[in-house]
Length: 420
Image (cartoon, rainbow, N blue to C red):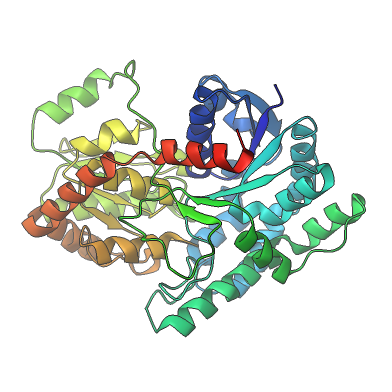
C-alpha cells in the first residue's frame, strides 16, 4: 500500500497534532509515514508510525542567540521577524525540503502543516500527488478576527482584520521566499510568490485542528477549509507520576502550573525567579515545569514542586490554573482540562491565543512577556483562582471540548478527499 506522508517541523506542539492525525489515519487502514526532524524519532516511532528523519532541530535553533533574541522581540514587528527567521532557517531549509521530497517519492498523498505550504505545494507539484494542509492556528485571512501574529490583537473591523491576514501571509512568505524558489528552480518549476501562497491556502483542502467552540468557522473562508475540533492525545495508561510528584499533589490544594516550554527568552533564570515571587505574593502552591527552555531554580520553597516534564493531559486536570506561553497545543490542553489559564505570550501566534482565552472568559487579559512582573502575574493568578465565574466557564467549556471527535472528523474528511 502506498503511504501517506505527513510532513511536520517545529516544536513538539507542531509535531504532536500531526502525529495524532497519523495514528487516526493508520487505525482507519492507511499506511502512514511521518517526515519530521530527527530529534523527534523516539517520540514518533514509539507510537508505531514509520519515520523519515529530517534535518532541523528547533530546540537547537531556538536556544541559539538569534532564537533567544527572537523569543524576546520577534512578535513586536513582523517585518523584523523576516531577518531572524531567514537566519534560523538558512542552514537547514533547503536540506529539509529535499529530504521531505525523498519521503514522498512513493507516497499517494502529502499532508503538511499549512505554514509550510510553499515547500509542500512544490513537492506535490513535482511528484503529481494530492496535498492536504493542516493547521493548529488559523492562517487564512478573515473579517472575523485579526491574523495570528499580527502585533495589534484588537478587532478594528472586518476590513482591517482581513488586511492583517494578507499582510501576515506576506510576512511568512518572506521568511521562506529565497529557499522556496531555489528549491523550485532545482526542480524546474516556475517561481512562487506571496499570491501563490494565498492561492494555495485558499484552494487546497485545509483542516483546522481546533475547536469550533473556540474558533467558530468564519463564513468568508472557502469551502475547502474545515474546522474539525482538536487533535489531542489520550492519557497514556502506563504513565505514572514520580512518587515525589504524587506526594506533593496529595498533601495540599491543587497547585498553579507555571511553564513556558521553549519560550524562556534570553534569561530563563529570571523567568523562574519571577514565577516563584508571583506564587509567594499570591500565596499559592505551584508546580514549575522547566521544559527544554532551561528554566532553572536555586532556592525553591516546599510549596513549589519543580518538574522536568509530564504529560499535560495528565497534569492539567490536577491543577488549580495553568500559566503558560500561549502555544496552540498548550492552550488546547488547558481548555480540554477545564481549568482557567493565564497566558504570557512571547512571539507569533501566542498573543492571538491569549486574546482568544480572554474573550472566551476562561482567563484574564494576557500579559506580554516584556511587561511581565511578579506583581502582575500574582494579580492574574489571584483572578483565575478566586473568580468562580471564570472557573465555572472553564469547566463547562472543557466538558464540551472533551465531547468533540476532532481526529475522527479529520480522518473522515481525508477519506472523502482521497476517495478512500
